[in-house]
Every structure is written in C-alpha cells, then in structure tokens.
Length: 127
Image (tube, rainbow, N blue to C red; front, side, top):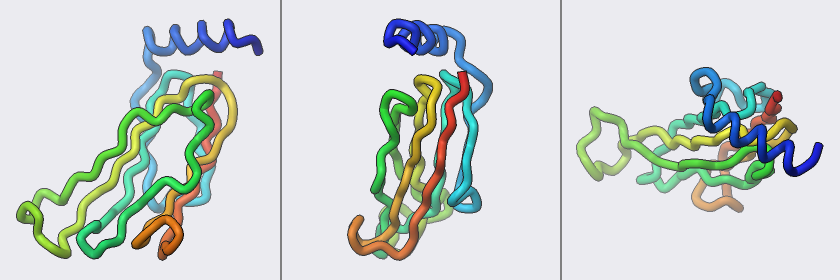
C-alpha cells in the first residue's frame, strides 16, 4: 500500500470518525482487539501510584498503525485529593491510523524493570 493511499485513508478517517471508542481493561489482557481505521481505542487499568505501583508502557504500538493520543491518571472520586493508598484509573487513548497489526504492552510496578503485573494487547486495525 502506498504512503499516499495510507495518508488519504487517515485523512478520511479523521473527517468521518468511526463508531464509538473500543474500551478494554484488565480482563482483556492477552487478547486481540479489532478496530476500524479512525476509531479510538482506550485501555483502562486500575492503578495506585501512592503505593508506588504505577503502569508504564513497555512496548509502544507501531505509530503508523496506532497512535497514542493521551495518557492520564484519575483518582477515584470517593478519595480525598492526595490521600495515600487511594487508587484510581490509568487511561491510555489511541487512534487507529492505518490498517495493520501492532501490540501494546504495559507493566505495573515500582519501575518498568521491577513489575508485578503485565498487560498485553494485540491490536488489528481494519480498513
């Protein structure tokens, strides 16, 4: 597929976004998810950075196929601001850019090299 065709598909997908975002979480670990070009993919994982276990990306997706658009942490609503031991949700947003297959891998721990949990997702972007 030529680079011009990929660029045209990407531009068209931005003008006419696909269906609602595909949202995945811990129960989807190790699975394969299909999204359409232009569609948003969201990964939501429980996190408690005050413990200090945090999620980090250990394998970024192929940016030609899947682009990272945002990465945020939100503390649970019932927790006082800055409370130690209070958890929340770490969310990554991606935009399916062009047809292809890629993988996203994350690890939770004190550092990316010292992790207690992992999350892997195979992503297939359909035309």
